[in-house]
Image 1 (cartoon, rainbow, N blue to C red):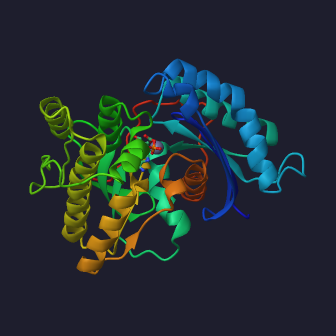
Image 2 (image 1 turned 180 degrees about the horizontal axis):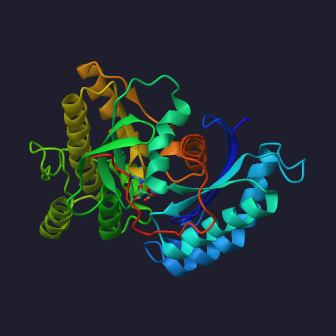
Length: 337
Ligand code: KG4
Ligand code: ZN
C-alpha cells in the first residue's frame, strides 16, 4: 500500500483538497479561499460559508486529483479519503465530510474522519522528517490557542490553553477595531511592518504565570489606548499589539518546552504564519538550544494536506472511520492527559 490519501478540509472559510503519499509527500494541495466573500461582513458568515463550499468542492477535489496526476485512472488509485469532521462550522463541516463519504463509497476506499486540530499538529510533521520527541507545540488559530506536549503522533498532553479569546481571534478583533480588514492576522502584520512596537506599552497577560494564555484584556487595553490617543497611527498600534502577543506566545512555548524536556518546539495554526512570531520563536529556541520546527506559512493556515497526513496516520494506526461518523463543531483534541 502506497498510502495515498485524498484529504478534504472545509471546517471554516477555505475549501481545500490535497493528495498526500505516506503522510509526508504532498502530491498536490489546492485551496480555494472565501476571503472575498466574507470580507464585506468583517468576518465569516456561516450560512454563506457552507453554500460556497458546496459550490466549489467538486472542482477543488478534481483540481487536486489532476495536479497529482491521479485523474487518469477511474476510479483514481487512492487508499483512503480523509475529511475534517470537527471542530468548525457545522454547515461547512457537513459539506466536506459528506463529500468525502460519498467519494469513499463510490471508489470503494475507506473514509477517515479527521480532527482539524490534530491536522494542524501534523502540519509540522509533513515538512520535517526527523523530529526528536516530545515536541512542545503551540497551536494558535482563529478558534483555538492550546499548548500541547506531543509525545508522538496521536499522543497529546495538554499543557495550557487560552482562558478566553484565541490568539487569532485577538488579531481579528483588533484589526476589525482599527478598520484594517479581514482576516485580521495578515492585516495587522502588514500594518505593523511600518510601525513602532514600543509606541504603546500594552499588557502581556499571564506572561510570568504558568502555561495558560489570555488575550481579552489585551484587546480591551488596545481599545482603551486608541480611544485615549485618537491621533495614534494604526501602524504603531498594530506593531505594539503584535509585539505583546509575540512576547507572550514565545514565553509560553519556551516555558512549556523546558517543563517537558522537549526535543523540539513547533508552531501550528494560522497565527503561526506570523513573521515576527516565527523569527522570535526561532531566536528563543536557538538561545535555549532547542530545535524549532516551523511549518511553511501555507501549511500553518487551513489546508487539506495536513488533513490527509493526519488521516493517513489514523488509518494506519486506528483504522478507518465508520461512514456514520458525525461532524462535531466542538470536537476537542484527544488528550491522553
Ligand atoms: O488555522 P486557521 O487558518 O483557521 C482556524 O482553524 O481558525 O487560522 C486562522 C487565524 C485567523 O484568526 C487569522 O487572523 C490568523 O489565523 N492569521 C494570522 C496570520 N495569518 C493568519 N495571525 C497573525 N499573523 C498572520 N500572518
Ligand atoms: Zn485551522
